[in-house]
Image 1: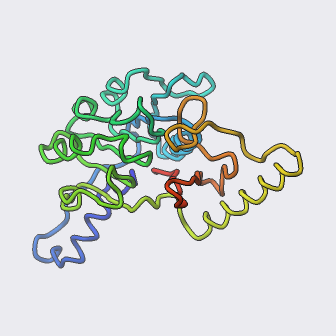
Image 2 (image 1 turned 90 degrees about the horizontal axis):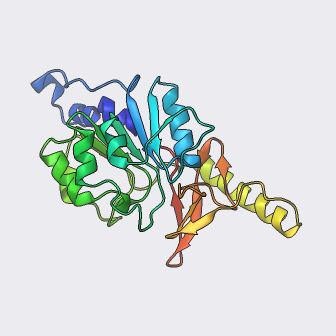
Length: 249
């Protein structure tokens, strides 16, 4: 999603489909991903995998979590606004709780600046959607990539109309293969549990309906964990199965 927003891949594809290329000429150039400063809010299992993938592009990684992770070579910011001010791309991959609801609001978006983009693969309410729409409309940030929304499955009409916004229906982690792998992990962990053996994946804490690690970062669940390089959590909300995404890059 970071690549799509920066390179404007989806928007360029729409440009071709609409027959605008021969009429209006070459499509405006996007921006490269390599070398960009990426700030990640929530460096749990999911955030760490995002960081690893973006490092391959030569991105400079910094992050915000409840506590600094001394074993990692990334710069820690206790203040989200300071993190945003030092980032070209702001990725949200944290759990949703009272502390992280609207953790990205108007002030954080202003700190990101007119050349910055925000990508949310955490929870919809981690981002103040109304503030995001205003920032995009007024050109105070360059673009956004959203896999989650405050009122999903309903999505703001304004967001749907913006060419500099990439929208996906809460499916970032899901493929036929990852769903199958997830079921295999679930069965293996259940077998281990009822056999009295250690679980294949670590335990976590539930906050606001989301499984998190000790720093409040979204992570693989007790039963699921790492599935072929993609992380997912599976939980029950209102009696319906729901899967949380795990990859922004």
